[in-house]
Image (cartoon, rainbow, N blue to C red; front, side):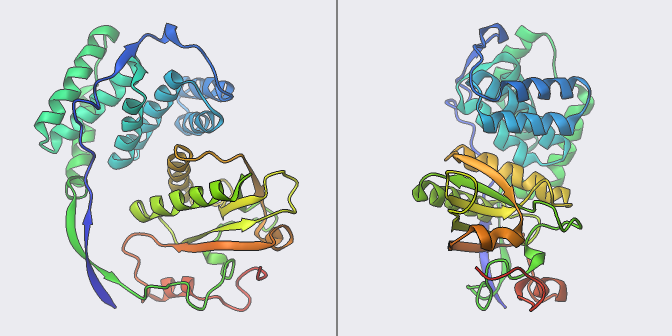
Length: 334
């Protein structure tokens, strides 16, 4: 076991350019994109206090495609959901995507600015807080409502509990052999794949692409995201040539299925991971499959990686079992 010094980045800088946005009324929305029905379903779920349904439908709407005004609204809502889960960094990531659109609804800007003002204030980032509060005051004057005191206080308490992480810090971590895949193979251990009791479930998720180059770009974005925001569990991801599926797209990025997997934390992580990757390169199609059928549909694995959670210790018996390929504990070799 070795040690290395790791610097964790803090929250992004809020420059004057970030909050320099053009605010518009909801009447200005000109609906476009294929995600409109999911967007409306998300609004209905929200009105019915179904936070999970709202989040899923907003994310599906974003994946399917939305005009920028509704896109910003969806990002703002998802950021609010991350706050409810005490994921400050995840919330800020969504709110920054609102600002990046530049032309946004008053409502979207209001949520992003007021929440982030509380967060950055608690971190003693005064200049950035002032910019956010200025924008929040502008939207508040137009909309006529502000953040409830108890909500703001809950956010402050969460920020205080995560302050070192949110400010960024340098720490020493244990490391281990550089090539953790040594002696292992793709699909060699069920424990690195989807966790489900349903043996007939579609447990593999395939992001499909027409071009190998786009598949490789998505894979790079996915593994880069995992390096910066590690998954909550050990998992593996691969790229493959899959010419025998029913689809015209034959290049696939394959990872455990977020719906079938029984671990809620994995589904939440994958949602954020794919949303980030989709902003860089969109897949041409996607489908579900079964890991036990991968060998039938895939001719070649181009690359694969085992992704590890933060502070993973390979010396514990439970974790050591994840870095082995037992004779009867995986699927057929590709």
